[in-house]
Image 1 (cartoon, rainbow, N blue to C red):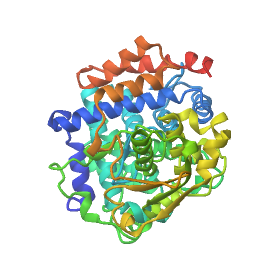
Image 2: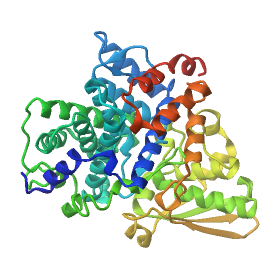
Image 3: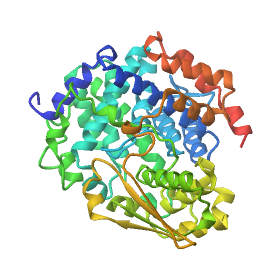
Length: 466
């Protein structure tokens, strides 16, 4: 066990201290945590939130030690992690690791929060747990071969995210390397999450985050009580995670540069509530809009060249569907961006979906898989957009890295503004500022009690505003 790559990763995660993080990594993580809670609070009152939090309340009749965001009642750690993670993924506005093709925060932060609440950990331990979870999830996602994993129908947020959540919860409990490795083995036995939600717009899209967070907390609790797992749960030839879920794994990437190169720093903070694979296309549309003063009515049709996975996920024939499916449609998202200059979560439901000009342009968009762009999808997700105008002109723009990517990092002010916009329906501005201040100095907090108290009192305003 001690010689396996999974054990070396476990030992690194168990020994990780927030004080040893590079300044870039620590600052990014705090922004990611801030962004995470903004997304969670912004989803209060939505239908998936009602389902997840309602189920959590029903199963929490006996109470518990852990916070349910926006709820007066408390719950057990596994239920709280599942409900809070599901809630935070509803808007699909949360952070994303491009090279691992997963959403780390929605898996890791709820698991770390629940574990820290039952262990009484301080803010520095919470930040270390989040760091351990992000790094573990990113390394699993990169090593599994994210394109090959996706093409088998797996969703890495649920699968690889389970490992990140297990590492986070174990680090919050201050488990040693051997126990944390057993938690990774327990996570391997539970990891799941698929793209089947695209057929019928199922809520499994959001649940993948919830099950990953729950799996992580349960795995860490089991390991702490003596659960013994496989000596090589990730690379085992018979039933190992890689063998089951990918035709193109790169096991060496699990530990490549471990402790020297933090893969968590490749995390993107999203500025559009859409599938990340669509966001370079959105930026291209906005760039052409700004450069040429374009309106939707100027455009006759749109051609997008992109990687194969972008075509699969974002290039389907337009049809009105629930938000769980609509946030993936590239043509519709570009139409909204072109007409309004920005994209908000509300654009994927209600009257916007019946806007005749948005529908026309969405249907007039053709997304084609380009072999050259498919070949670089592991590293970046470029889109080359061509607008065919009604006056006969063609306007062309390629974007390789969208706004919010590490190569185009948002400022603290950008992330704060997003947080305040998202939390406006659920928190008074003064309370929102208190939450932001706490999260941006989380490593100095003696415990998480003030934070969780603020998170619990958001619900009445959120529900009355819907």
